[in-house]
Length: 247
Image (cartoon, rainbow, N blue to C red):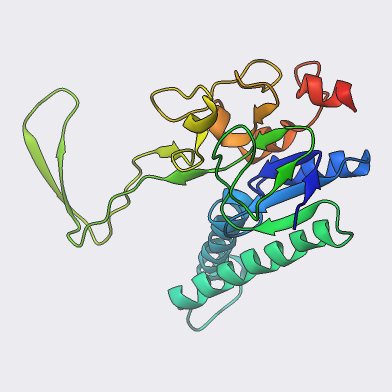
């Protein structure tokens, strides 16, 4: 079965979903391909679950300070497993809410991994594009290492002498890298820099006509609000210039 779309948005994150909804409201036939969870990094492992955990920590801290307000709480104990379960539940509820975006059938959700295989299509459900317009909006993935040993060897900035620090936990923050390595970008010759970031112009257009990139994969500030604003024609005069002029 062939499916014809005016726009295929790859990645249901904070840039992709608003764009898909906006274009659908303008009468475009839009599909959104998502290989795992709706919402991108913000909903699934960024803002939403992080703030949920912080809320539990803040409440525990306040409970231990109640004597300053003339109150007494016999004991305050944390259940880390329960805290994480609450955070996961809130993230799941957010994803369920985002499913309402597809209730009317346009945009249409395609559950699966999208990958370019050439100028004539992608390998997601044999999608055929009517006007050859694709928007890449994949979020970035964390690049972390794991260790069973919580003793870290460090070097002071002004010395090459090793220092040993002992702690109960080790938090590794090694940065992030784009989720662009398995999109088949090379098959249509999209320019990507040595860090995997898709190169775009002021309209978020790539070097390949009909292909744009929004969200974290285009580089710049990796924030929910900046990804969300990528779809808006008000940003930088006219983001997705050609797309909105076309409409």
